Length: 288
Image (tube, rainbow, N blue to C red; front, side, top):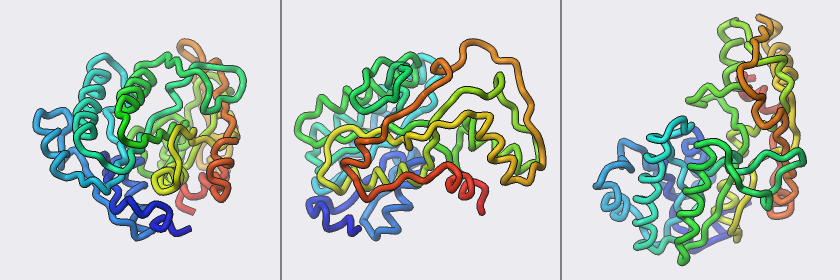
């Protein structure tokens, strides 16, 4: 698909947070598609600094699409929450003055309340974590900007080689096995989660930028898997070079043990897009 023919009003894509885990993958996709782009990292603009608004205003053009993928994350305390709100406030102040073509915000499935049935884009947003509160607040701040089309992508647990957080799941399990260290599971690893390949998040983000779409898309495959089964898949890929250790669970099982999604909207809006299966994604993660 030729993305450049889908929205000729957009001359360039500006990625705020272009050096981050998701942002850098979006930049890579834009390069592959020969789309004009600008990556803005913290070295370029410190969004917590008073000078941020002027610097960002001078960099943006009216024919830009803006991707916001910059956050102090995961949010673990009130200071981090406050910092993220300040960052978004500075961005919003610029967007109110610069009439860019489109904005895509990279949010999180953490904005949703826990439910026993599959989540979709109409599910209740009632976050129970500071991280979820941060993303939902930022979404609401952006929605106050009425003159610019706003799209929001809400990924579930993302995996990929360059994950800086070494998140529990594919990323940390793969790195442990690469060092021939045991995988450590909480409880029996019985909780079920959906995992999405970072490449898919970037591809879906590009589609949301250039196709005539405005609104929310959950980036989730619809195929949940227990952490125990996930660990065994990676053990097999690493030729059983180590084993699983089971740790006593401290506190309540996250999301009551289940976090699943209905990906129908993705296929309806983007029928040519297919999520990477967990088996194929784990091969990429290991480098096969």
